[in-house]
Image (cartoon, rainbow, N blue to C red; front, side, top):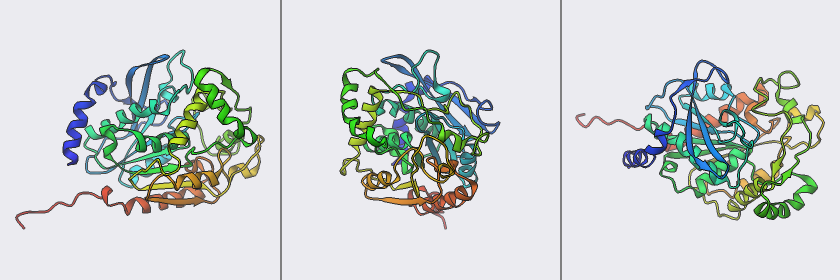
Amino acid sequence: MKSVNIFLLFVLLLPLQAAAGLWTSDTADTDSTYFRRTVVHPDDYSGKVVSTIIRKGTPDASKPGLLYVHGFNDYFFNTEMGDEFASHGYNFYAVDLRKYGRSILHGQKRYEALSLEEYFPDIDSALVDMERAGIDRIVLMGHSTGGLITALYMSRSRSEAKNSVDALILNSPFLDWNQGWKEKIIGAVSWVGKWFPNLKISQGESTAYAESLLADHHGRWHYDTTKKLSQSPPVTAGWIRAITEAQKALRDGKADIKVPILLMYSGASVDGSEWTEEHNLADGVLDVNDIKKYGLELGPHVTCIRVIGGLHDLTLSSRGIVIPLYRRIFSWLSAIPALEEPEELDAAA
């Protein structure tokens, strides 16, 4: 049945693939084992939009695949994660969403969105690329806002491409606001966003989370700070409305995601705009209790992993945290029958 779906997927999304660029080296952002291609999508309300697909190495149709979707104020740079999945027998792919990272075009409003469903074609284009390479056993993974987007995609998308996804991994998904007293006015700002979507909302001036990541501060990572800003930029009321509407759509059993879900979150949250040692041992962005509370509502097959000492992006935590985390992830994946290599039977035997 999947072979029929692959054919239909190819036919339906052929125009989209025709707009995709050729694979080129991604050495500017990762290393020589990674490649990228640009996908041109139909213009949106602000003009031209593209997404960027990144992959490691040459696809192997005999292996399953993983597609990673980054968070807000983010892009794919974590080759350690890509290498881990590749070394465990996965074709690794990532996507830089429209108006993020590699996909930001000159003059665009960074991270602009009026609905998170705008990102569905970006995910579709990456999935169909994997399908065309013969990869039909796929894990979808999202971090933070990317976790919210991928959960919404698995819940709401009607694309044929979604049928190739056999499991969902959520790394600290953005399932609820964590703004302290500001959380009380989110509803009002969301309402304003319907009528004044371009109204700018400050996110403060804290660099504490960036300091917990960057190697020249208190972390272990080197990345392009023009693509992942140290200080989170202002958002718009329209963006806040898009996030709020997506969160509501996944509440109270409405998500009903059928595939197995691995829900991962830190052991604790930390507040404060100034960096402290605690920022290197906890989630400095979201409330981990909210992640668990709303994550358990996403579907009937949710497995939780609470990562003591983990950062907001758990895969960027210290090696002492990350090594056992990957061990747990691959143990969970190994128990999903749909990801196993199809058994070959010799009819003549």
